[in-house]
Image (cartoon, rainbow over the protein chains, first blue to last red):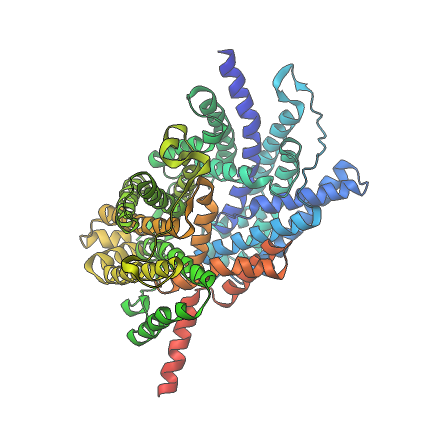
Length: 292
Length: 338
């Protein structure tokens, strides 16, 4: 039983990473209706910016804030320059655009900061949390920040005019335009927010997985899986999905014989697909009703 | 708007109907290209012949994805898994059972067809982004499955298998590369013509009806579930044959040759070639084989960025891929004739 509890705790700790990423994924999905394959790379780039700022002697929290602002602006810039012109192109062409962005960001980061693994500081410290060896204070802090972001997003979308406008623009663009919402800028805003949330995720994850241009590869896959499992329309679902995927993965690795580290990912994915077969809109997603 | 306020209502998007002829090239153009493909290898170096062979092989895999996505409207990021199944089937049969390479291809196709058909069953319940995730999972899992211990006796585990390149039969005076080129050309041609006829047939029309409006198609009596899984099967089968050919051409199979990156490349090939336009598959294949090399020759450190920029340029100029170029060219020629 102790093994079980420990594995669940460890799963929750890694799950926090996936939850962070999944939240960013859902944000942009809400705004633009696509999964952004370059999301992880954008988060990695933001993390490198904050690292660079700290190398220049700027204190942690100032660097953190400046990175958020830079990422927000960067996200908007990317949307305006690269994806607004593609708005009328077929969906699959947009997906190709995400892949191109992925390649560009990864390669530029690799050239600027090279591929050596870097330490990244944590503001929470890394001593054991409440006497447990499995969750460190950093991981507890990470879970806390993720939950705070979730609450903040909920309040933003539910209780502000602009949050309502963003939801309207995503759900029914034509009707939203008719009531005077600038849908094109709502999309840009969505990109900016997703990019900033991605930056937070990257900064929280970096102390655990270390900073390097490929740090997000694995995390993004789990982030997508978590987002889809929770339902792409629900930020809460994304966070719950993140923790579930983390726990699944750990339990599968511990209890199913013959599953080493190598097979953890396929098993987690297989489980998610099984869930989707029975609940095609994800655990918390709203079923989409189609008019014919 | 009388739908319940909580539900998200989306209008079924209007899809432009694709005229049948738009799926292919004219007879004249096809014959000229075929003649060029027959003659060119006699005048170029072995390495270029090898690259042309690879373009055809990847072209087949892209074509298979095109039948699935352009034909039936389903999306797959898992084509690398079917490619791997085909490649391993051919390699294992050739090396462990000493079966002639040409005979392994239909078996590779059948095994992949079965795999695709079975995978298509549960995938029926998924669509769009969820189907993408499911196929993605398959692609991620495949290299790990190929490394499994109890399969190692046949698959060679992490090491993979070395495949012997076949000699030209009947004492024909040509090198291995050139023979393989003509062999691949013959297989490609057969599959290409078969695919075009498939899309023009009753089944092809049923697939396109499903793509354009699933509910209308089922109201017209199309067995949606059957045709969707069949599309998966056929697509996987062709990909499997391409995989088998690929294994023979590169003389080597290993789990890490068939990662998700291959599936992403094939997807890019389809977009660049034009979704739903079969000849474009080969243009797309040429793009995914040559452009990374070009990018590397422009700047080694930034090759990824150069590749991304080139890809952006292509999709900015022609969002509908090579198909758009072909349509414009056709119109120009038509105007010149007048």
